[in-house]
Length: 376
Image 1 (tube, rainbow, N blue to C red):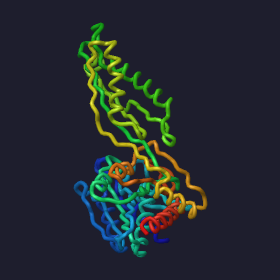
Image 2: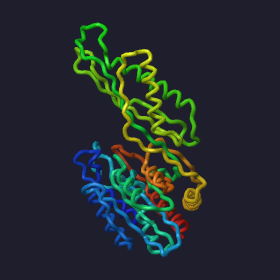
Image 3: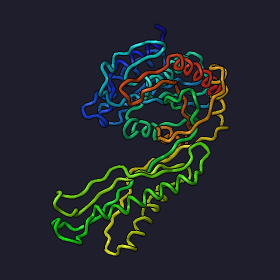
Image 4: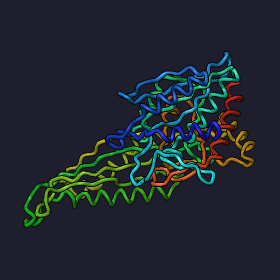
């Protein structure tokens, strides 16, 4: 077994289920210590940043000789849960694939980063190569948020699986909560104020807004923003009118759209309902939001990746956008231009997960060539 495959096997064999996502999950402590030891043995300067108790980021630096640009390689160490998997942490190689929880999302990309970083350390480049193996990507992204607050680089590659395609943009999100107040009353009373029924107008307004957004796509890679109702709850018992109804809403945003805009759109729906129902009692509360990400495709790093990926893989590298949010946005918001580029496979968050080993090897080779030219 070659070095890269052995490393990936070792990573998959370590249980690193995110404990915020799955209560009782093992967390990232053990895998962080393994990665730190591996990188230190390869000659990198390594330390741990404890983001929360027992959950450290690993920071490894191949110090440059001076005068070059710094490149950051980023990968997350946590995984989702393992429900339905027979042997999630027993890596299995079959038909050029490695199976196991995290093999695809995203220990394959992380292993490729580690091997590329070790080789960069031996070449004595002018610029620094920084590798960050971070916690909590699968839940709140606090690992990369911590990296973005502490470290600086001229550009970053996030090694999420992209099927050897280059992702230069992805959507953000805004979470909003709506509550409608009714009046608790016995179900036999005609004409009582029903909070659930009144929320129906909000749901119809959200559906109409989503249709309007999708009818006017504004981004060449991402299309349009969207909005949907995520969770709803209300009522006391079946024999009563509901005194309250609560709705959780998610607005997916494209570059140029803001949390303030998302809040204003939803408030406009409530204002229209209030005009028809003067006694409507509605509350709108903003929640968590994360910005969309976009790095120009003709910037220095994307251009380098495309050129070296074509040389290694023997084909053109498509530029894509993502409908989901990633840690790359946290780096971009901190002023570090970021893109996503990683291996191929299938089964992220599924009961069967695998990564294509040839694509992992190609990623390691591409990262190495990009590092050489970018860091000089």
